[in-house]
Every structure is written in C-alpha cells, then in structure tokens.
Image (cartoon, rainbow, N blue to C red; front, side, top):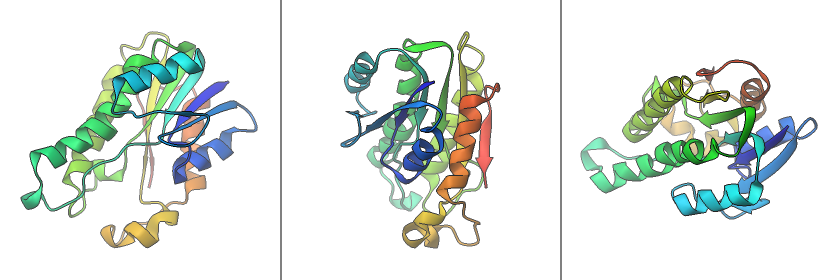
Length: 198
C-alpha cells in the first residue's frame, strides 16, 4: 500500500515508518523534514500536500500539539492552541484526505492515554484526546468505503526523561510496541476503534 505518515520525524512516526517500510510504500511528511512538509493547522498547507502526493491507500497521523499548564492559569488562547493543532489538525487531515484515499483506504489518528486517565496540568490534552476519540467513533459511520481508527498510547519509554515526572506511576510503552497498533489499524478490517497501548 501507499501510505502517508504525517509526523514521520517524531519518535512514534519514525517507529511506525520502520514497522511498515518493508511491506508498504511510505511517504514521510513532517513540519520541516521528510519527503513533503505540512502545517496541519493550515488548510491550504494540507490541501497542497495532498495535491502533491496524489491518491494513496492510507493516511497515518502521529502528530499534534496540545497546551500543558495549570487550569487556573490557562487562557482561552492557550486552550484553543490544542484545539487548533492536535484536534482540528487531525480532523482536517480526514476532511480533506478522504478525497485522495483509494477505495478501501484508511485513516489512523493519534490520541493518548489522557483521554481516560488525566494528569495534573493536562486538561487541554484530555479534552482534545477525548474529542478525537469521539470524532473517530462517529466518522466511521459516514466514511463510505473507508476506515478510520485511532491509536492511544501511554507515555513513551523514550520520552520518560522529558515527561516522566508528569506521569507518576504510569507504565510506559516503547515506540516499537506502539507502532504495532498502527500496523493493526492499517492492515486490519476494523473501523471506529481506538487501540489503547497502555
């Protein structure tokens, strides 16, 4: 299959590309690196990306930023940054991407454990991840002939040095294990599912 991986230069994206590259044609996309570049917060940028790639069999998103900070200090603008980036950015990939997917094609988005298990300073992440999972559940019913799933990883083992303090008592998962869930979404038959790697 011809597969676009958006966020391919990140820890998860690299692991997904490595997991799939022996069996599929991979198009690596990043904000500043890769075969193509895209800003998922900009509709024109996403449209330009898909115009360049042409028809594909799958779009995998392993990207999206959210705001972390105490709720008492969070501004509307800060909260909106996560909505515009990780939430609407990935929704935008589906809204525009459905036009370039071949019949039987699939989307795989990325949410996260915070949708169900919140942490201190992570309200924006919990809201965004929860909304994404709702989007996947509903969109699966309307994407005629296409599939959509999401992967919800816990904190990555590779990221414990940077983020471990924010996840006290959480069990981590390494990126190679997380990447298996993206393969399952890509090569499987299910739709409207959230694959939790916890």
